[in-house]
Structure formats: C-alpha cells, structure tokens
Amino acid sequence: MRPLNHYIQVGRKRLRCGYTTGTCAAAAARAAAELLLTGAAPTVVCVETPSGIPVEVEVEEARLTEAGAECAVRKDGGDDPDITDGILIAAVIRKQKEPEISIDGGEGVGRVTRAGLDQPIGNAAINSVPRSMIREQAAQAALAAHYLGGLAVTISIPEGEKLSEKTFNPRLGIQGGLSVLGTSGIVRPMSEAALIASIHAEMDVKKAEHVGHLLVSPGNYGAEFCRSVLGLELSSSVQCSNYIGDTLDYAACSGFKSLLLVGHIGKLVKCAAGVMNTHSRTADARMETFAAYAALNGADRDTIQRLMESVTTDGAVELLKEKGILEPVMAGITSAAAGHLRRRAGDGIQVETILFSNRFGLLGQSEGAEQLLAFHRKEE
Image (tube, rainbow, N blue to C red; front, side, top):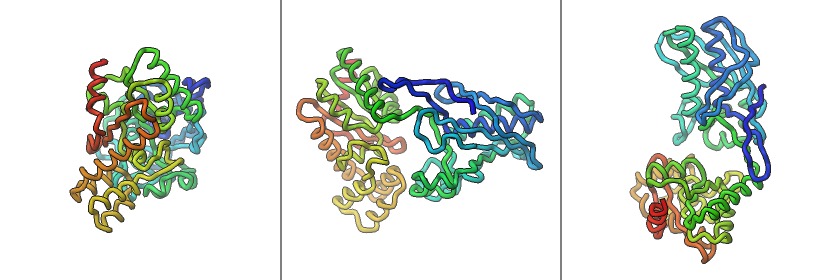
C-alpha cells in the first residue's frame, strides 16, 4: 500500500487523508484493464479523483484468468478511523460483445434490496460517482491499448461481507457486503474535538472579516444548494458537519447578528426532534419525526407504518407527497427545527433555517429566512 501524502489541518492537528473505496475500485479496474489488454500489469496506478487530488495506488495482486484479468489494491484510510482501512479491493475485467463498459459487484460488495438509495433495487451497492470513476479508468486503458470493444467490470471485496455487519448497510437494506462509496475520492479525517475546533477557527476568521450574518451548512450538499439554487456566494459561509449545536453555541457567544442554517432534510429533520449532533452514531429521529408530524396532519396507520419503514428521507418525502400532506408536514417540521435551534442559541442572535432535498428541492424555510437571505445577498 502506498500511503497518500496529503494532509489537512484539523484544529491543531495535522492529519493525513486517505482514499475511498471508490478510488480503490477505480484503481483496481484500471490495473486489470491494462493487464487484460496489454498482457502486462502496472505496479502503480494513478487515479485523478473528483476532488482534483491525484492518488497513486500500488497494485498488490495481478493475474490473468480464463475469463479475463484480475487486480487488487489495498485501501488507505489515512488518519480516519475507518473499518475498511487496509482491506483489499479487487476488479475482474473481461471483454464483452456489447460496445460499452458494464459494472457489477461480486464477492463482498453489497446488493441493494430496498428503494430510496443511490442505486436501484437489485444493483450492486456501487454508488454513482465510483461507477463514473471505474468507467473512466477502464475507458482510458482501452483507449491507450487501441481497444474498441466492450468491457465488463466486476468489483469484489473479499472481507466485505463480514465487515458489513459492523456498518449501517443491513439496516439500509444493503445485503451481503460493503458499499463502494465516495463523492470526492478522498477520505478526510474526522477527529471530533479537532473538527469542532476547526469550525470555531473558521468562524473566528469570519468574525475578524466583519461578517455579521453567518451562513452555515452541514456539508457540500448545503453549500451547493446555497450556490446553485439560492444564488448565494459562500464568502460568509461555514460548514459545521454534524455539530450544529456546537456551531450555534459558538456563534451566539461570538456576537454574530444572525445565523442561517441551510441543510439537507436528512440532517435537519433531526433538529425538529431537538437533536443537535446529527451523526448517525449519536442519534437518529428522522422517521419518528416524519411519522409524528404526519399523524398530526391526519395520516392513517398504514402511512405512518410506511414512514417508519422508509430507508431514506427522500423516500419519506415521496410518500408524504403521494398522500397529499407534504406541505403541512414540512411546515411543522421546519417550525419545530427553527424553535429548537433558537432555544439552543438563545435570544442574542437571530436563527433561521432552510430545509431541502436534492431530489425534491426546497422543502421548508422558517419565517425569517427570507430576511436573512436578503442580508447575505446585500453583503455580497
């Protein structure tokens, strides 16, 4: 394994990044494609990740088979506490008649059995971004070898089925193994105390720059919604990860005039139940909250049961929309979330919130959110 030589400053700590299972799968696919098409396996594969950071991955296993070629690489989790750190991720590639690159999962890769996830029921749990990375690496190998035919890629994780028992996959309806994940291709370490300190430090910088109205999102989804849908620049924004309560506390004591929290419904529905650390290992009240507000708006027992069994918040939203009660349910959830956020922050700072879904768009905004949006647009 070749460790990734990329570091980030988290609070006072300098932590080493790693690379995702998606990056590993793409690297293994590239190596296997080169072996199949040229007869020689590379010792190192370089993958350009979606984050723009190139990753060099050593090829640990390579062999030609009757069906095609197989190569494996070893996962590097960096300084992140990740159960997949050090495991082998392999790709088997064979030629196929169809002029396309098909992707499937083999041993140790989970299979989707419930609706509402990144992949449809029946597909291997290889998410969209890793699929694109795998396809791109296989295509580049084919282009270099002047091969114009199709390729079939099968990703496997020998330890995946056993390790998946320690994850949320069984609960989400992903059976038989791990998921191949990663939107950036890079694993950034998540030391909790250091991460909270880095959020505070970022807020200190904003305060020093005389930012009075703070724009906060838990992560990239919220930031992108602010940019592409709300039309905001992100010069006054801070990402708070799961630490909404700590961010509110620090914003209040730092003297900010206001805080506008913009987040995906999957995170912020928890705030409607008073949950201020939205990490799944800390608390989860998503479906219970949906069910409670659906009941308050006349949902029958079957609808409430289906909400409780929903795998994702998008699935719950779709059901509420189908039943014609999405608008009042979201109004109640938004109001409750805003109330809990304001109580946590206290009276010295105006706190508003906007909830959205990547699939369904804007779902709710608190009463004063429009006023704060106007402040942010004016400051820009």
